[in-house]
Image (cartoon, rainbow, N blue to C red; front, side, top):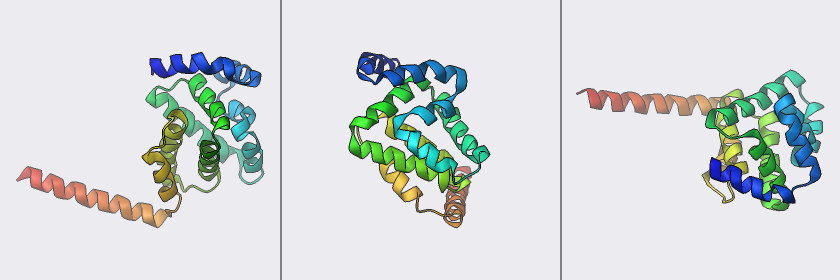
Length: 165
């Protein structure tokens, strides 16, 4: 993580002045405050706020904060990477559309995996399986999720039965 932090610090001089102001407030006010002011999410946040209860939106934003903390990503680095995505049209729309889906449409059973994929997309320069996974997961409904969990449980039980003999 130190290497990513050092690299982002090196390029931070190229970021818009607002980014530096946002980073100063993040620790004090949290990701919701930052998301409202990050260009990649600003308009999206306003659009979403009109459609869903702020309590649910804040819960989804908090889930992203928790995942960032859990995997040890520094909030400053995440915000810098979001702002760098403004210069890559493909990544910009991928992040925006994934976030929009998480905030507006994702069934609760898919939120955690989509958050992980979103963070991976934001933090990595190369395209990865996370991009493809988000497109597949966006198409799942709660019945699909329940079925996949049942298949996983069945597979795990079969492996346990074989290991115990």
